[in-house]
Structures are given as structure tokens and as C-alpha cells.
Amino acid sequence: MTVVYLTIDTEYSSALAAEPDAVSREENFRRMIAGDVAGGEAGIAYQMDVLERHGHRGAFFVDPMPALIWGVQAIADVVGPIVDRGHDVQLHCHPEWLDIAGDANPLGNRTGRNMRDFTLADQVEILTYARDTLIAAGAPAPVAFRAGNYGANDDTLRALARIGIAYDTSHCPGIAVSDCRIALGPEHRRPLRHCGVIEVPIGCIEAVNGDLRHGQLTALSLREMTAAIRHARDHDIASLTLVSHSFELLCRDRLRVNRILCRRFDRLCQAIETMRGVSVATYTSHPPQISKRTAPAPVLPHDSVRTTLRIAEQALSNALYS
Image (tube, rainbow, N blue to C red; front, side, top):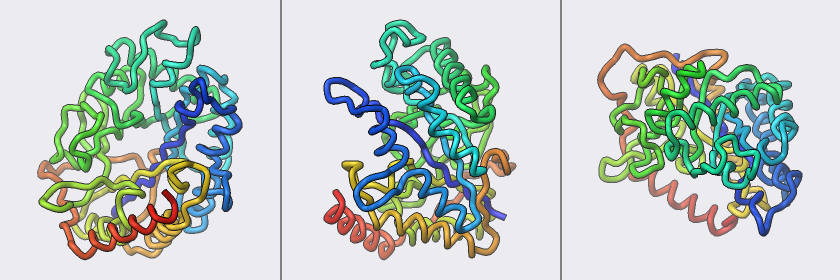
């Protein structure tokens, strides 16, 4: 059985919260979390509806850092519905919220865009605050973490180990130049122990010229994702992690629903439901296991037809919804 982790980074926008053009917390929630925009609703409630319709549970990585300016209730409004509906809540963190936290910044005047911008001691403090805030907002104690922008380094993993979080999923082999500075390479595509935690890489496929492309809902077509899942199953790969966001089914301006992406997400969940030898799991129901195999996990080979069709669909999506 191959396990698919459908992970959804769930976050308010720090850009929408920053002066001089800041919107209210309620408006930020409406756009970034609820996705309650022109043409309907396509945020976390919609995502949970789709997941549940096909018998799945998602892993929602929730960022508690906005509590620095709005209080714990802002995070409870996110966590509550996810927990009530039986989905998984894990820890996410965008430290750029420290830039607008003012006197609430637990590090004083120290700020940065990514976790890797901070010392080990500062990362321990940030992650302790984030974990405790998530729990105060009504989530079970998290066991897994993903850094905002994938911007972790080895000290992030050491900090996670110190505060008792067993899994990290910030390593993204499919992005050649990213904010991640974890000392792992594109060949590290199976869960492995690194710096005191189990690192769970983001899934990927082979792209043009032997490069890799990451497993995100907006980066791969439905055809590519389903082919990647079948390939993982057929090659006895224990798990595959796919990424989305609470706002990802919206247009880039976060003001309209993107129907192409909504259909892609729905059909992905439907395809997995009917796929033999594949199931969707969470970090709570089925924690990732370290592979006994040392060879890099094989990836779905590049296919020019799939690539061409994806590019055509993206061009249509951009024309209609950019």
C-alpha cells in the first residue's frame, strides 16, 4: 500500500496584514483561509468537503504566527473547524510575522523571512511559541512541521527535535533553487532520519532535461499527479507527499475562485479513492516510516505529452484567472 499525504499549508497573509494597506483580520481570513470570494467559496471548508466526499482526511499545516498581532482566537478560528471535522492539524511557520509584531515579538527586534535566518536558540524560541499557540488554539500537540517558503536549515530540525516534534517536511527535491537550506540533495526522496527528526521530502516527478518538478497542486496537472501516484505504488514506494495551500484554489489576486484548480483537486481526490493499492493518510493516522532502502526513490519519468498538456492547461488557467 502506498500512502499519499495531501498536505495543505493553511495561513493568513502577512502582506495583507502589513501597513499601509492592511486589511482587517476578518478580510484576511475571508481571502486566505475561507476563500469566500466572488464565484463561491474555495478555502479550507471547501477542501474538507471535497476530501470527505471521497473518504479522505487532509493534513493541514497551520501557521500560528499571526497570533502575535491578533491573539490566539485568530488561530482558533482556523483550527476549530479542521479538528471538529476530523482532519489533521500540524505546525507551519512563517517568521516574517515577526516584522509586524512590534512589542509582541518574542525575539525583541530580531526578524527574518525564513526560519534559516535565525540562530538555533532563536529557532527554538520561535517554534516553542508557535507550537504552544497552536495547542492553545485547540489543536492536538503537533508531531510534524513545515517551514514557510520551505525555508528551513539543519538547525530548524535540531530545534524541532529539542521541542519534541518528530517529523519535518520542508525538504523539496523538486525545486532546484529554493529557500530550503537543509543539507540534503535532490537524491534524498525517501523519509530519512536527519538532525534528530524524520525528514519527509515533498514528492516530485522528472521534468525536461532530467530536472525535477515538485508535487504541488499548481505545479503539476491532474494527469501528472495521478501518474506519479501510480508510479510510486508500482515501485513499492511507501509514501508520496503532495502540497497545496488554503488559498490555492483561488486566482492569484485571491478575489475569485479558479475553477480549473478546483476541478483538478476534486478529480485528484476522486482518482485516489478508486486507485488500487493507494490510500490517503495523515501524520496522526499513519506516521511516515523511514525507508530501509538506501537508493534514491525512482521518480515518474518525463513524458513530453503530459508536459505539453500541462503547459496548455496552465496557459488557459492564466488567461482566465491570472
